[in-house]
Amino acid sequence: MANHLRFVGRTVMVQNGNVEAAYGVLNRIMAQDGVADAVRRSRYYEKPSRARRRRAFEACRRVYCAEMGRRIAFLARSSRQDPWLGC
Image (cartoon, rainbow, N blue to C red; front, side, top):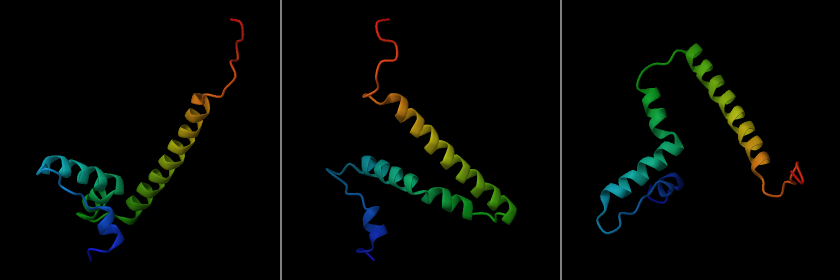
């Protein structure tokens, strides 16, 4: 099990006995993977209609965030020409 890719990807080394920092790093990794949310969701039964609505909302949010990120990157690029020369 120790060589399993998911296990290795979530392994955190404790340096100088600083368990608090390692615990914070592990929590951040688990939050990015969505493990805590999945456990929280599976604690209680979720009706199929609510699950469909949640998945549709998550998909819409992913699309919206990707589009907004693309727009912000477009506006924030450094190679843009100055639109108001001489002003």
